[in-house]
Image (cartoon, rainbow, N blue to C red; front, side, top):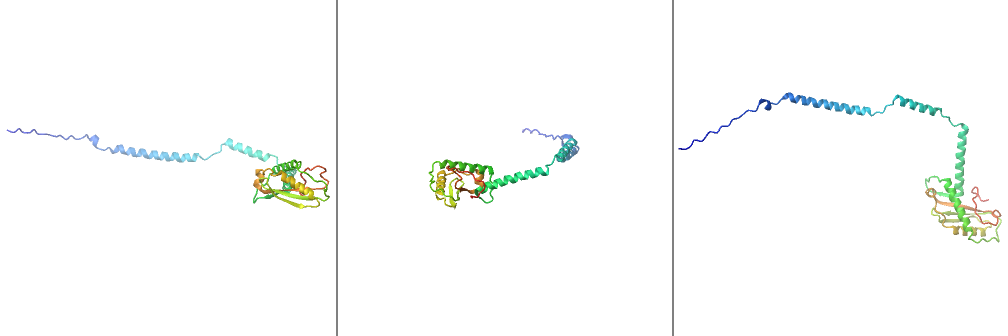
Length: 229
């Protein structure tokens, strides 16, 4: 006899209704809870931008008004004071022009103005150098001449000689040769200071020969004005 197989049974158990049935009541509050947050965020951002605008407090406005009132009460310069200041400025400008005339500057295009003190200091240094060099150059005084004369030499920005020109020889051939020898002995002069170098391509110096004005010495001095007479 064959054994009868035992019967297998499978039972399907339904899940509790609470677990399977979606609860619509729980989703609605989730959607409504997001929208208020976004609205609040936008409100905070807009209010932050508005709060960045500066405002004046009553105390600050009062302090600023007081400051402006003090400026209004400050004494104004009188006509005489303004005229004196203008005269001083014109005097400084005239002195600078005289210095530029004495030292003939070959200016660069659109050159900045040369500092008058810097130019004067450089010219004084040149005079001292010429006088030191004169001690090493022999001078012939047998025929000093009686007529005035003038020569002009010009320097490159590096202090080297650009040109030597006789403006008026008169009867001073010996003195002109003596001056030329002194200039050659003095080369090279100091390079131009930065402000003069930026403004000028070259610098020319006029030397006047006035018979009987220098005595027995061979000294060079700065002349007043730019005329040799």
